[in-house]
Image 1 (cartoon, helix red, strand yellow):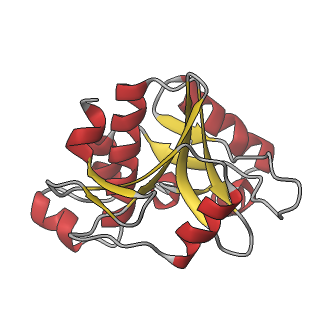
Image 2: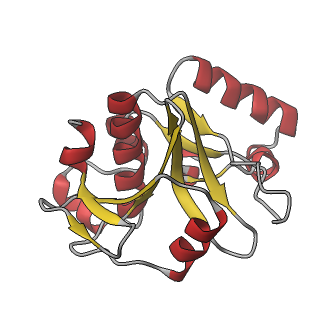
Length: 184
């Protein structure tokens, strides 16, 4: 249950270990076991920009939204819509669906300690796709996204949302419904 509060966030093994009264290496071993049983996805950070102070700790996601919701006490759609983890739930679900559909050669997230971030970077046959997940009716470009896009050499940047229509945010960035992203 404690791990559910870290869904779609940076892993902090020392904090979890302290809360459980165990050693940090034991917490890491538990996370390893959960990852090996495909319950948790550990998404590693992008590490190719030596000029930036990059986040070096992975993000973790429950791979099964139903398990995540149960651990958070979410029992209905109405519960989910009121829950503070609604955005994290959407991000984890959408990330899993896109990774399953596209089967990338490699995948990371991007985060700089100064604040710019991108939820997912996929490399597919040499092409680099950047993805930001937004659970909003009409997502826009944030300053954080602009900074991340300036730092990364992306072939295609997407903003993925739960809506139904695609549209351009600018000359490079396209907002895409999740349904369009999982049926390429």
